[in-house]
Image 1 (cartoon, one colour):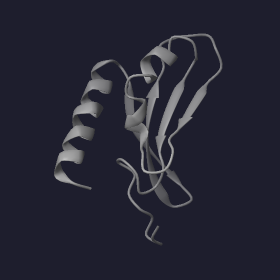
Image 2 (spheres, rainbow, N blue to C red):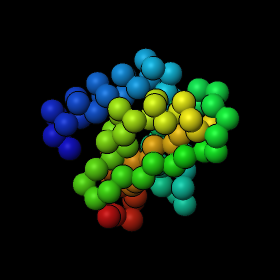
Image 3 (cartoon, rainbow, N blue to C red):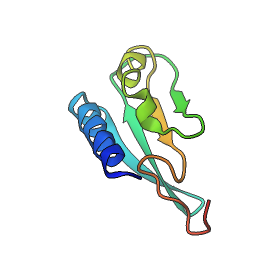
Image 4 (cartoon, rainbow, N blue to C red):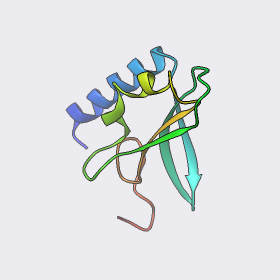
Length: 92
């Protein structure tokens, strides 16, 4: 990941956290996965946002908080090797 891309991701992460979105990680089958979680007290069902190829959870920077007004929890995942989710030890 380039230095500029990493800086942009860090700025987006700080912006999300400043709006009340949590930055978390989970172990999934031995691989660490980074995700954002927004819980703003809405009554709807949970929503999971998955990015496409060559992307990461930061593609949802401007949609996580608005969705959280209608869904009880909004998860935005960075799949392994994307964003702040490292590649698994087994490789790509």
